Image (cartoon, rainbow, N blue to C red; front, side):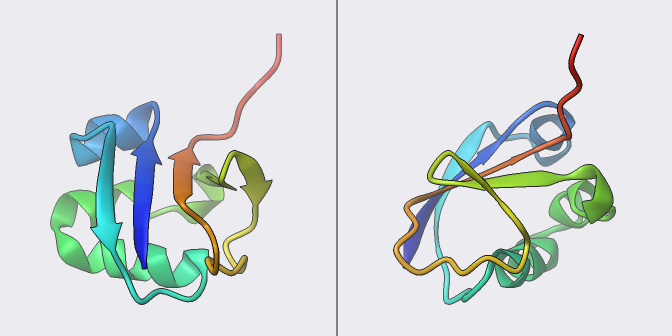
Length: 83
């Protein structure tokens, strides 16, 4: 499947891209993260601590075990704070 991947805040800074389109065989978000980590060191660094990363699938918050079937956009971002 083809996915649009968006990176926000320090994830964008570490990876060096605001977005990219990739083709993947990943079944879940966790599978996708594993694929991305193997691409290059910058991805491995960005996803080294998943407790500091949130994900949205087609603009809805999701967990890392969420399936990717039917998803077109995956966004990765740090936890948000209010105030």
